Length: 113
Length: 239
Image 1 (cartoon, rainbow over the protein chains, first blue to last red):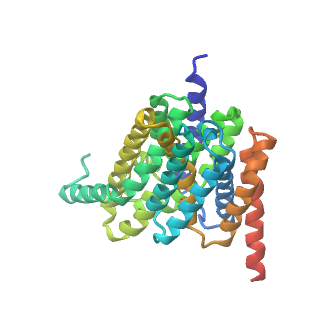
Image 2 (spheres, one colour; image 1 turned 90 degrees about the horizontal axis):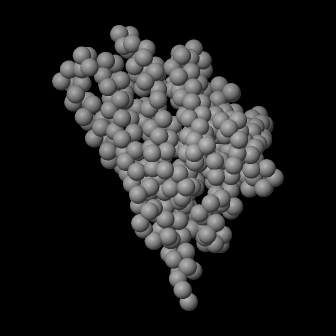
């Protein structure tokens, strides 16, 4: 099996289930209450799942981020949050601050000597 | 498109112009991160573009790449993406009545639904009520279509960029993914149940991943999410 087949299969399945929700939304539009308890639960599950992924990517990254220091990742994430709130909830500035911090800290620790 | 007159073109143009401002900048940057993630996961550029074109919901796309990286099964990956993106259903359900016009064919709405994502959805709530019904679908197609093009360009740019900048910068671009989602969540902390869900999910994610990478993420969502939902209900009942 070529290298690309398995990720292609996973991506196709991911796109399929994603579009299924969208199409079902068109079919059900006007027939169900989108503010009901079921959807509260649905959004809680999605929030928890993504929060779990975010903290796993920061604390226990799989792949390239393993080359970075855990303390550097935590510091960068903390700084991103701080700048975000200081800059009146600017996602752009927060992300830039966090990415910039990790790049500088990683560059310093990777530099010879 | 026969149904579009001069006013329609003008509305479409202004929709695209609005999309290409700040929304495109934030969205483009988040997809630059995704493009870098794809490259560093050892996948080809075309797979990244395929994912953006067909998935076009960044959280689910990142879930797929991350679960591919830890060797999760097809079933668990599908369930995790379905749980991540189930929020699209209520979004489409609430958006469609706003875009609906009697004379339009259903396939147009089925096509438009593919382009429903949080930015287009939120902006449509602001703009569409002021537009005549016959132009709303045009507005949405142009606004979201412009963002879709930006997302594709961002994915390609991030992939190419990760190939020739120094290694620390590439790692920073990959780190953009968790940072971006973390801050998106930090903008929306009004509902108590969602705050519980974020905290419980963040706490459970790493240990459940260590327990079993295949179903750890799905279990995190179901356990922490359901607990937060119940806690939120309980708190509301008492308050």
